[in-house]
Image (cartoon, rainbow, N blue to C red; front, side, top):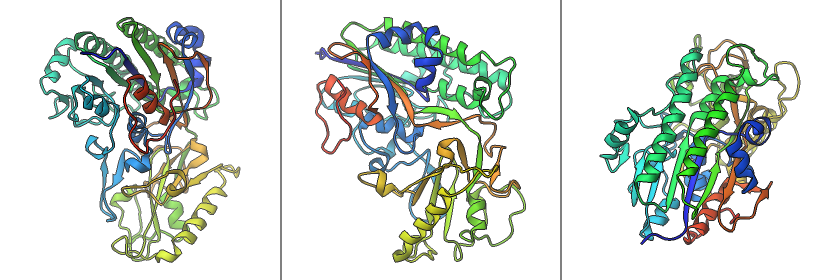
Amino acid sequence: MRNSSRLAIIGLDSVPPELVFDRFASDLPTFKSLMNRSMWGPLQSVVPPITVPAWSCMMSGRTPGEIGIYGFRNRCDYSYDRLRTATSADVRVPRIWDLLGESGRDSILLGVPGTYPAPPIRGWVVGDFLAPSATSPRFTEPPELCTEITDIAGGYILDVANFRSDDKTRISQQLFDMTEQRFAIARYLATSRPWDLFAMVDMGPDRLHHAFWKYCDSTHPRYEQGPFAELFRNYYIALDRHLAALLEDFDDDVTVMVVSDHGAKAMLGGFCINEWLADEGLLHFKTPITSRTRIADAPIDWRRTTAWADGGYYGRIFLNVVGREPSGIVPAHHVEDVLGLIADKLEALCDHEGKPMGNRVLRPSDVYPDVVGVPPDLIVYFGDLHWRSVGTVGLGDGWYTFTNDTGPDDANHAEAGIALLSGPGIATGRREDMSLLDIAPTAQTILTLPSPYGQRGVVLA
């Protein structure tokens, strides 16, 4: 028999509070109505504010350190040769649907990052955007669900293809198409099956921000006016309309959470972290780098290298430690001194115009209550996340680059997403102290589930 408490979590990747709560608020009647009957406000993300691991942290109430996932790709061990893309198998802590299944109740999951390959749950799963394709084995659970959703939707758009490109007209059309299809499938699943937890994530907003931020932000250094000037407004209006239709499908007993895992902000440029490490004498190559080369493919001289880094929306620096890495040269008793020296130099850096960058350097042991897996030795937010970490070497631009090494990209991630909680017994009004880690314990309370020992966060309602 179905429990009387039901919960719908509608995830909108990368939506920042300033767009839905302020800039476009007058154009978004559904969001406005939700705000009037919700607890709402900014939602502080995790360190780092990255899609993977943030959604798994949100659904478990655990930090990236406790899950052991620090980004899309992670070191499998202390060897040098590979980073592996995180999958559902790497999430070894219980998430909300695991607890719900143990109580004999059903969940529906649609596109939630961290669910490919589809994990075994009580209910139905459509995997996330990191699947190779929508026809990949274990993309859905049960397997026949794949045929069902593609039949009703005329296919399945896994993600906006190559959204870091100059083909803006195609990207903009795929953004609208993907979001429309994702919500259509959400409505179909939500109304065709019994459930106590319904959770979906739409990646559309994230792709919009990365591909088009410079067209909507007049302070962006590469700001452009033109045919995409109203794209942000039009997309959010369409998103608001899709949200309204989905909410109409929920019964009155359903508590609704609309959440995002992080926000977005203008990307000013990229800092070539490995070029800097090389110039500091901390990274050495066996032969000179004469062309654009991924750090994973670079001929690193490990017997002379102290540190190297991985690129992305934030920087990860790894030390080459004696007894830990195969050819480590940093003695264990010198690790803290070396980390302190690197952190001090990075935080003192100026930008290409000689102004302080405002870099923040964090140590996993300082930001996570527990650390498992293979964490970076230092986490770096360049320009407080206004600059990207560029791991590629041989770009020829020195330390600062304004040509992204993974393709055109206008936005970086910001630390604040959004949360709107609406349902029976939930107080209304703006709240400033909500954390992404609060979502799981709050959801468990709404669903009358126990909280696992050691879970982080507080119950919001």
